[in-house]
Length: 319
Image 1 (cartoon, rainbow, N blue to C red):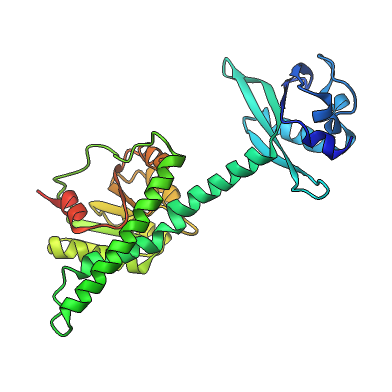
Image 2 (cartoon, rainbow, N blue to C red; image 1 turned 90 degrees about the horizontal axis):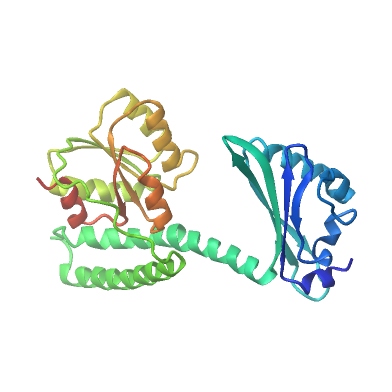
């Protein structure tokens, strides 16, 4: 079968496979669409290994075996097309459970090169705008916000403050654009995390962020408003975890996206060690999915987006 014939169709086909690896049910929009994967026309009740083309048998059986163990998969098959972009087939394997036991695996094959490519680009764009692009912007906002509250006696404070004000304005515009685009990707996502933790009286605070500048800025903000607080900084999560295990901080300000041990793993390790210290997520992420995920951890009391400002710090510690 030619790849050009496949590319003329934008359909989906569905196969239901039981624990005996027999074809329990199927729905094929077009044999031309899935013909390259099949040895012959499918018949319900036949062994799936007898139906699938030889070159795909080993991979299919391996994936099915893992699906019946409770795992699911989504794989991409690219078909080269002369003088055009590659055609993309997306194939998903989903275990179907009944009465606590996986009885079937659903295999769905759908083809839509344009939509599949757009979806992939949107997901990559979402991650880029939510994490990587916002990180330097939040540092600019933090620096300008913090420095505006510092007395610069040996400098021309008028010019410096004007420059910082301009930087803050431009960074704010960029940040608003990113938030708007992100909201389009996550329509209906909620920015508000919950009732907050106003009135917290934490004395011993641990800051965990792999960005040293961010840690220093947050330490400065906290120290300016709460001089009696003990603030300990860590740019390596593994060192922070060891410190928390050996000491008893009242509060942890935790970044999410860090190398080696990210924020999610850090939270899991806190739970595994039965550490009940309150945690506030402080992240450049504005992804509502991550805010919802954070709520699953009992220790997480709030989710704040960078940059921290005097108002946000005051909200945390104001009695």
